[in-house]
Amino acid sequence: MMKTLRGFGSDNNAGGHPNILAALERANPGHVPGYGGDEYTQQTEALFRW
Image (cartoon, rainbow, N blue to C red; front, side, top):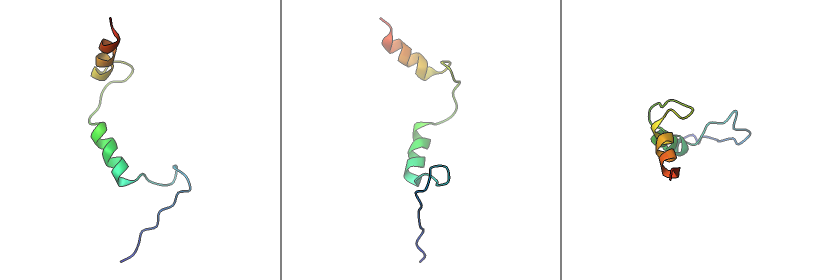
């Protein structure tokens, strides 16, 4: 069995660890509009309102 070598030269030429990529996929499902037009911004703004 051949061992895969990993390099740490630069984030521009090395891929992310599969566990990190999987976590990003779980945390960011789907698409939302940017610049405040999304439900997450609305929920956060509501927390800061008096």
